[in-house]
Amino acid sequence: MYEALYQYLILHRQVNIPGVGTFLLERKPADIDFTNRVVNPPSYSVALHHGNDEAPPRQFNWLADALDMPEGDVIDRFNDFVANLRNDILSGKKMQWKGVGILSKGLAGEIRFEATMKDTAAGEPVPATKVLREKAAHTVRVGEDEKTSEEMIEFLNPAEKKKSYEWVMTLIVAVLALIFLAWHFMQNGLNTPTGSQQKVSPKQEEPTYKTPQ
Image (cartoon, rainbow, N blue to C red; front, side, top):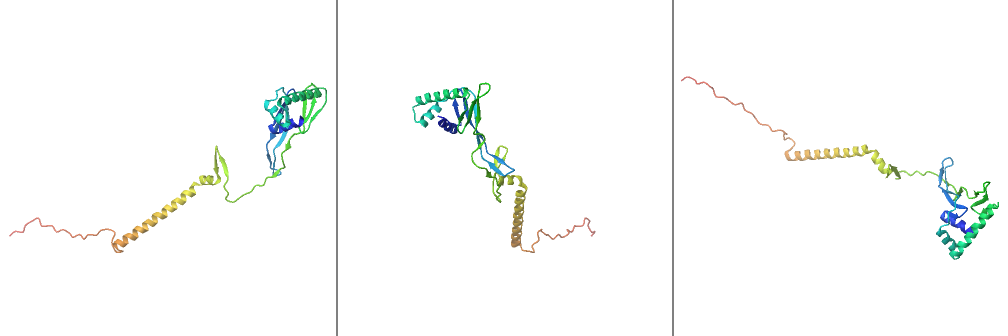
């Protein structure tokens, strides 16, 4: 029964033993060791939460499949296992559960648990080497949004983009001006004045007096 309950604990991360408590498989996430430049793998520990919760139906269903026994027989066998375990502990025996820990009686008559699976690493540390790739785009978080590094560069440097557009517009205006001048000279010639000239002759006024006859 110990082996089957251990497998159930690993798969479902908890197993209930009424009168003893609920064993939980707690996971500590991976972390970075900046001093040694490695990424430590996640680790696992088993903890006992005291209580008298009944085992859920899915626990018996799984045990029936694992032990290849009818569910009714599994329930009877499980109850006998729990009763014997409590009696052995309360009589002063230390019960070792391989891969999980040691159960014993405390000074106040409570059930004590000393985990053997404590901060057990699930693998080996991995070197944390930062790889820099030239002009490689990566995602950065800006507030609640995610943007690429290229988008942020464009957003933070609008002046350069605007300046490049102004240069193009200036060039277009200059080219159009040259085209207009060339067309004007082709139509009117190089010596054609740009303003109209008109010869003005002074107006001779008639005398206001008559010569005596």
